[in-house]
Length: 127
Image (cartoon, rainbow, N blue to C red; front, top):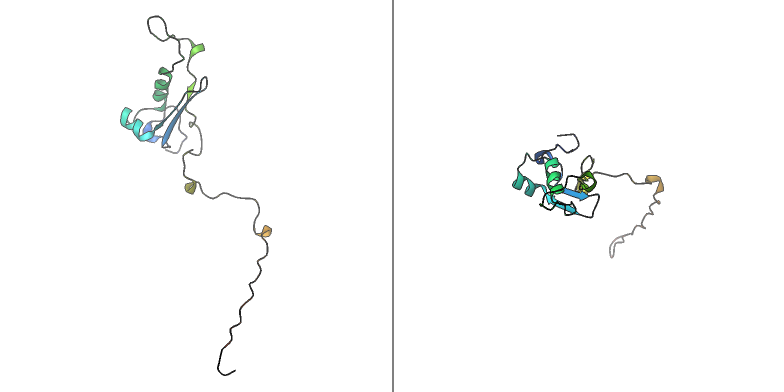
């Protein structure tokens, strides 16, 4: 799958090893390994349904006296997945990122000095 991951991406086609969840309203966060999520919920589970589970466990959502969650958008969880719509995977090893261009080049290099060559002499013999 060449397109960038979105909310409807299944775990089967998710690009990265770690699935990260963050909340914009509080400091709550969670990271989970892709293999563990696929084992627990199945490979056809979408990122959107995992985000819904993350929203449901928000400790800051107010509850009524009966224990039900209050459906008020003002108190909704600000949970999101920061890796969606991102180009390079954040957990890509440095050796797989490819070459990077650095400033400078051959013109900026100092000239190499030639090492003085050793002269070999024959000891004891005809000269």
